[in-house]
Length: 164
Image (cartoon, rainbow, N blue to C red; front, side, top):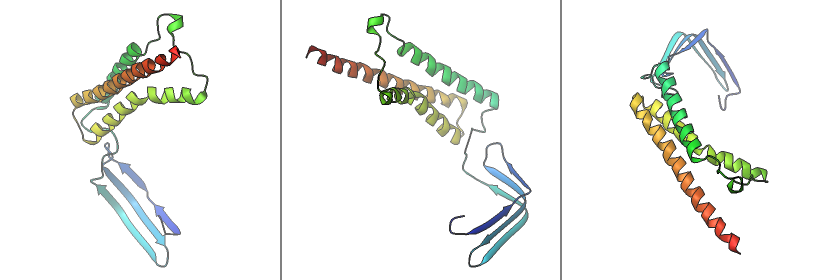
């Protein structure tokens, strides 16, 4: 605890609910020492109404697994179709020689997945229905298509310098 030089916390059991919104504690003993000593002792305590931290309680583990698998496969399939290598060896992208450029490519390539994950976490916290998770795939697809448009624009812009 900030500002308290000595804290002693003892619990016999600490049980979280499935959705992490409730905590049940038995054998709770908290001692904090600063100028005064404060001791809080309870044979049992229950903390309820916490903000959700993890998956939606509306989805069963199987439904959540299928939903996340479908999101991942859908986004990976779209990315594979959009980012496939060029057909002729001369048209293939030149591998960057600078390590930082390679890391930039990795980071940019991970943006659709990151955006999809953010939407999934938001939907989990709102306890959304399974159908709402289609929005996560839509967000990932929009980000991927925006990256494709940016790549085409940047490629066209830099190819115009080859005339000089």
